[in-house]
Length: 296
Image (cartoon, rainbow, N blue to C red; front, side):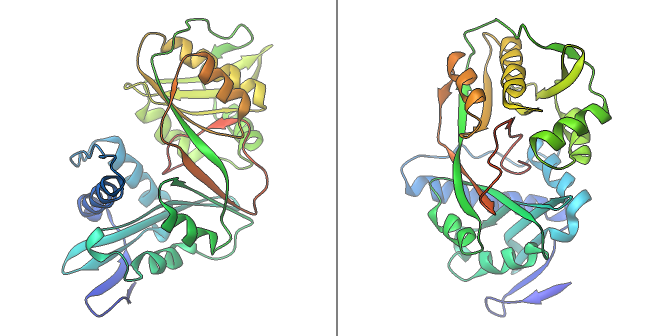
């Protein structure tokens, strides 16, 4: 499909894998402009076709390509968007417009293309320092309900959970945890997480599955999910114990207070927060730490 808006020089079409280098360039330019404007330089990275950024975008294209679009101007990517659907849950994964093309309605039109019909629940995460995007989403009924707290540092505790026992992940057990933590099945996402993580663990309490956690080679922890807040917190405690003395990072919704407490007790430092937006603004998260702003 191809549509035109924002002037005759811009056209909108479905995204493809060949667009990823251009999407990455627009993403980096938008992030650098936003952070530099606020006096907080952003550490941009070169496009790596085998890196996590590309792996996540390819995953979205493979499973939700009908919700991935680019705005193209003069043969280059001026902006792009992506969304994913899991059951009756729609998550807005990305919306970035190159600074040269901002203020021309590209972002609004890209959001319209990705909105993709009626769903019972919708959500997205945006940076707290980005009021323009937050306002655009709020007009659609996506209301900011809690910060997403970024924690990082070297965990000071090596004490793992005394309540949980590690096990090899099993699809049926992961699904049950997902239904309790998120309210929907995440089977297709576990394939990506297992493939790109250095460690994937199912956690048992009294022999029964109650949580899972992932951690990559750089110490990025997530997702972590539990069938209840206490199980999620204990899974995070155990994961941080694995990383004791080494760099770790995890993003936790502010309403997951048991998990926030574990991160603070481990000596992790708070960084710039994001914002979780929900429609309707109910079912606040209490039992998971996100994988990324791209995949929740």
